[in-house]
Amino acid sequence: MEGHAAMFLYALNHLVGFENFTMDELKGYGSAKTDGYKTICHAHPEVEVPGVEVTTGPLGQGVANAVGLAIASKNLAAQYNRPDYDIVRSRIYCMTGDGCLMEGVALEAVALAGHLQLNNLVLLYDNNQVTCDGPLDWINTEDINAKMRACGWCVLDIFDGSYDVQSIVTALYHSHAVADKPVFINIRTVIGIGTSVAGTAKAHHGAFEAETVADSKKAAGQDPSTSHEVPERALSYFRERKSFGKRLESDWEDLVRRYGEAHPVLHHAFQRRREGNVPGEVSDLLASFDTSQMSSLATRESNGLIMEKLWASWNALCGGGADLANSNKIYQSVNDVLLPTNYGGRYIRYGIREHAMASVSSGLAAYNPGTFVPITATFLMFYLYAAPGVRMGALSGFQTVHLATHDSFAEGQNGPTHQPVEVDSLYRAMPNLTYFRPCDAEEVVASWQYALSTRTRPTMISLGRDPVGLIPNTSRTRALRGAYVIQEDEAADVTLVSCGTALHHVVSASKTLEGMGVKSRIVSAPSLDIFQDQDKEYKDSVFPRNGRPIVSVEEYVATTWARYVTASIGMTTFGYSASGPSNYNRFGLDAAGITTKIQQYLGRLAGQNAMEYGWQQL
Image (cartoon, rainbow, N blue to C red; front, side, top):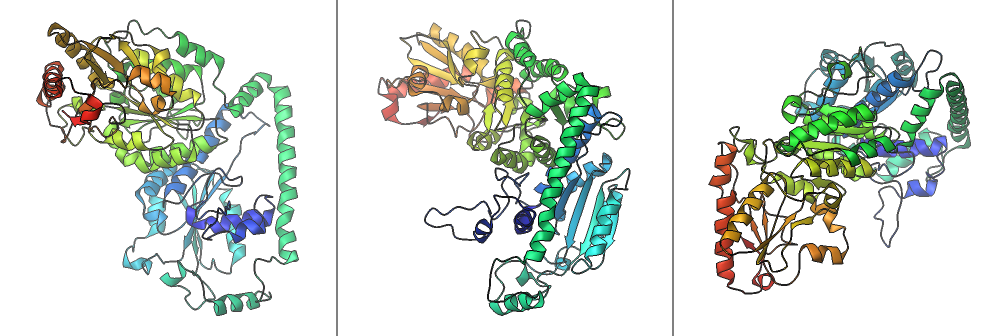
């Protein structure tokens, strides 16, 4: 359900008997919430409230979430249903409006749903021809029915959605009979019907005047002097659904019990999926994974090899990439692609739909959370397209693994349009999301160990395109602390810290500096998010607060390092269309450039306390 239908959802939850949706809670909707007052009836639905399945609000997100929920049901049914035992048969209903259907994310998701022939998905369009600013035809005159049909949807029309309830009911029943398409029900309504501002933008937001409210209550046979009261006849009509729901649940539990007797192995696997725990064999696979022969591989390549093993070991992993699977090096099998002819496939070809990819993944993750662990993949640069969906997943606490490859100017000849110098800052700053940038295969294993162990937040694994030089003493165990020392020297003149594809240049620079009489410690910091959660004693052991210089080195704008370091070598401009090695040289981020900048910095410090000297951009 799109967020603007929030009050409809809350009122309906109260009417059908959700015990948490009391009338007192409904009274709090739209209140100022002063003096610590709280209500579960937020301006937009939030998933932590029982009776709310996804957090929505930004237009179009709910449409994509609904597509994800529909895919999840189709996939789980294909894997576990057997003749006479349809234990998974969810139908997904989503209410939407004019604005939602103009959003790019909704159109991406609509096209994907039509392509996948998701006949368990029903989209109800409140077609009131009004937006916030005025009449819809000021900004949009398209034939929405033709568009939906062109995208592979079955379209049903309701011409009087304000009063002809039976036509809506009939359309909903008819939607069950549509065999090979999702269903779009175009319901013409009048916004603010029965008020003095009916059919205008003024009815879109703001409170109705008292006289209009009183007249509407009189027309419904209610006392206009009362508020927040439901006639007993109406309440009993809706509350019957609560007992009906209990019967449905009881019947389903009995079906699952009989399914267990008929198919004990499948039943056990189904129950494990519902519990959502990482199987022991998957944890063991990661703990014992041999990376000794992978040191020369780019992290995107080692990630692909690790993912291939994980994919075969755990069928909760589901998802895919935005038409860049070969470049991302993510695992896919032609026999495992999710299609109308193979809903049991787990690899989703999202096409060039990054925003929908992220938002559909939230729908997958929301389907009995833990049952699916969605995967997305594209270049780090293009996670800007996906950012609103990634953010909604983080806000919702959904476990998702985002694989962001080609994560620096080493991406090369595609130029600055494809070279992310600032995108990391967005994701490192995003609450409840962990950004993990491994330097080699050993740390890639750690990133997966972390991503699969955390149930209430997404993880973005940032991966390089090109092979890197050998980095000593990396450890999957120690990487799970976010940052750790890979080269120690208690008499060091400087601590160098880096991650990802920049770290091997730091290792080379350290050797050069040593030949010049400058001693250095080296820290690998794949995840500052994880490191921030460590205890003070550990953090001080990694970054000593003794006044000696600590310098970060990374191919990004250094927005997040200053809390730990005294200076940063990084980007202050966009990248350049050139080979990776020439860009490291051009921007002073190869071993020679790092060495020169460290020498100059130490010269300026001249033994002063680096922390008191203040953070420096080198």
